[in-house]
Image (cartoon, rainbow, N blue to C red):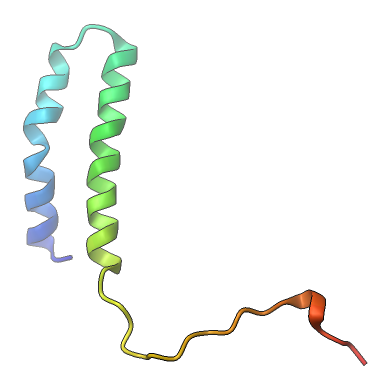
Length: 70
């Protein structure tokens, strides 16, 4: 994700954040605030990890219970 993409994603949510000032109940304010930021965080995370690695090999899981220590 580039800086421009992040700023665009945050700008899309600016009006929602500004509209929170109309809410008088703190619980409702906090709930909506968290939803907005979780949505932004999800979008940023998905854009940052969306490109799969170029190495087709996968790591094999390590199971410590199957190791024989001799």
